[in-house]
Image (cartoon, rainbow, N blue to C red; front, side, top):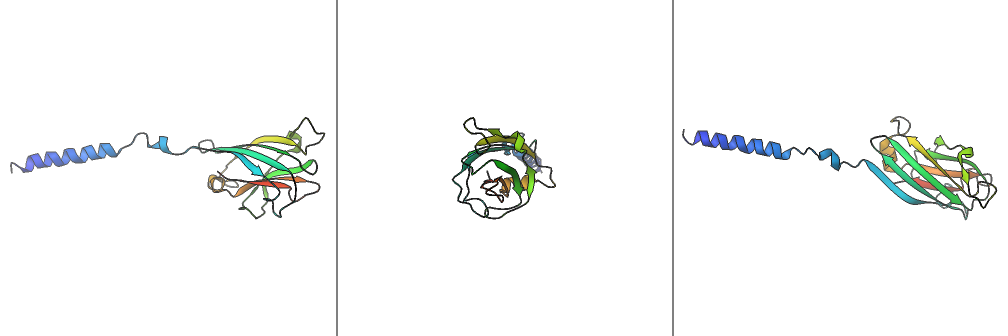
Length: 164
């Protein structure tokens, strides 16, 4: 009986110390909340169907899981003509086409100072992951893409997958 009481205290203290030690107050600090990828290449080879366009572009993307906002900035040069349309499309992996989920206004394009049309330019914007049409899971799985269209390439001249 004399051993039972100290053993019970020891077991109780052991359980309490293990319980307190397993609680990590800062566990949410280790959850990844932001995703960033810079200099994603836009080319005609990535388009569907592929184009022989010499145009090149680059895209910088940032996604914040707390605000559900995908922020992007895209720049390009060397298109066969002015941009007639640009959009984020989904759901489609590389090598497949999909419908637009967000069209870009061509009037929002900032053209390069060295050209008279938008064959060289840039655009920035945001896409909200509403959980219905655009979901966080699909953004992080890389099934959305950006495509720039011209009169010579109405299905898209250059493209890049939004992938972190």
